[in-house]
Length: 228
Image 1 (cartoon, rainbow, N blue to C red):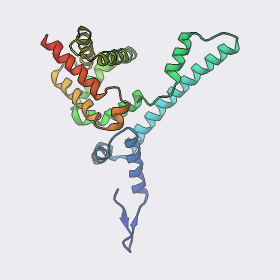
Image 2 (tube, rainbow, N blue to C red):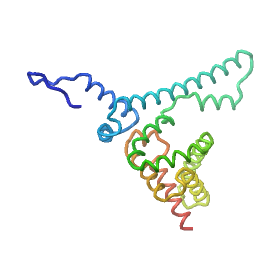
Image 3 (spheres, rainbow, N blue to C red):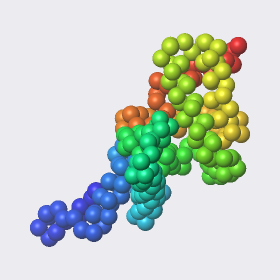
């Protein structure tokens, strides 16, 4: 932030500086490093309204998640009031959907990735990816990715990216990537570069789904699958 100076040369901060501070804090909330925030505020997100719109989307998503969790809890309590027991499936759903974790939400991840997509992808490339995503069942897409992450973590723990199971996982993983990129090699490279850059931020690497070591494992499995 650049302060103004009064007649005596003292630094002073007014509404313009306060607005910029708000922009920085909101973008920092998305896990972006200060250097990247500086670049964004010099370009696309120089407008305070654009940053406020991003913040509003994130808060709305969090409110929807909280409302959903409260609905599930109310239904479970009503069941108990009627003398019914909660099944293992009921308890598993409550744990999965109402327990607050440090995992990055879909809304947070989307907002954190937006500036990187703007930087790495041309406007027509972004439009093509959005069109493919809109044509897919996003709920099923998210469930498929969750299953792939869980399977990849289990295989990574075994430590053999050349196993038949790892090679099969890598092929299905790339099928999911290609469903958004259309199998365009250039878009696939840009997509990988986007996640690699995102993971340079320690907070994103800790809370995001595409862990650097997991990506390295799947990448090695994919290289071996192609070689085979």
